[in-house]
Length: 142
Image (cartoon, rainbow, N blue to C red; front, side, top):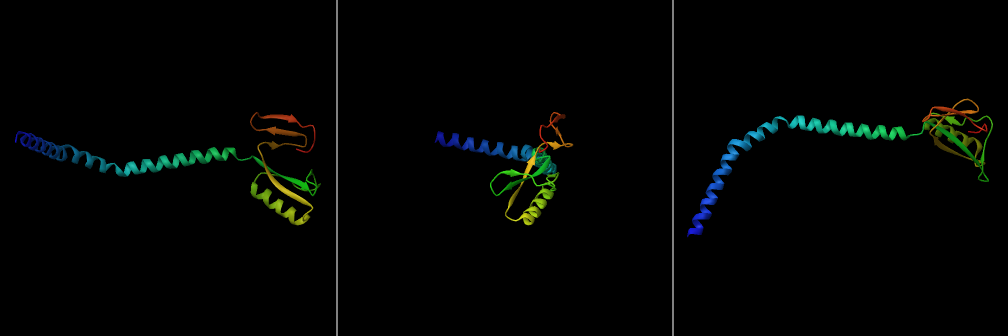
């Protein structure tokens, strides 16, 4: 009997406290939060876009600065064919010329597109983009 009275009093007190919190505190907090739901969604979208742009720029910086076509003969050795353009700034141009040369020379040579992180200057000079120094190359084939 005394135990039922204590439990009943506890349940009533909990019910009154819950109702008071619901009417006076929680409802106002929920109304306040609902006013900011659009702002919260927009902040989440902006944060996602900034993160995506950061990751994209990080990967773009890793891309090669120029592309070169390497020619391999039927014996598996690198070779140079006079009169062919081998340096390109874009991958699409290098791939297009590589396919053109492959169709032109058939199975005698293989043409591979290779990315390079340095820009080749005049005939015997090459420019390293990281240190910005020009160095003399001992051979003409860069």
